[in-house]
Amino acid sequence: MTHPEFTSICPLTGAPDFGTITIRYVPMDNLLEVRSLRDYLTGFRAREILQEEVVNVVLDDVVVAAQPYFAEVEGTFNFRGGMTTRAVARSGQDPTA
Figure 1 (tube, one colour):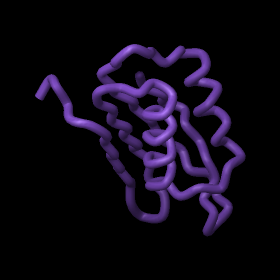
Figure 2 (cartoon, rainbow, N blue to C red):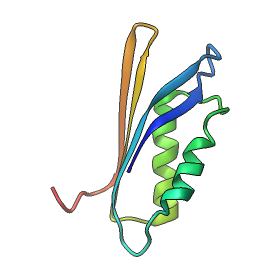
Figure 3 (tube, rainbow, N blue to C red):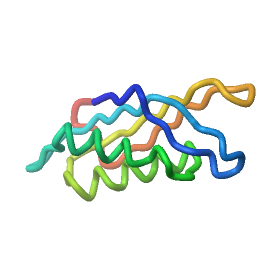
C-alpha cells in the first residue's frame, strides 16, 4: 500500500515534510482496512515528528494492528534542506525472500 501524499511537521524547523509512505506486509489473520489506514496516515499532517521516527511509529502500529508474519514500512521524503531521506523499518522475517 502506498500513500504518496504523506505530510507531517518537522519538530526542529516547523516546516512541513512531504513524502511517500509504502507499507508492505505478509498478513497472518488480520488485514488492514485501506480507508482506516489512509485516515491514520492523514492524522500525521499536524504532528511534529522526525521523518525517521514516522517510519518506526507506522511500523509499530501496523504490527500491533495486523500482527503480520512480516511488515516493512518505507518512507521516501521529498528534497528539503539539501537532501532527500529514505528510511526503511522491518519487523519479522520475510517469507517471500
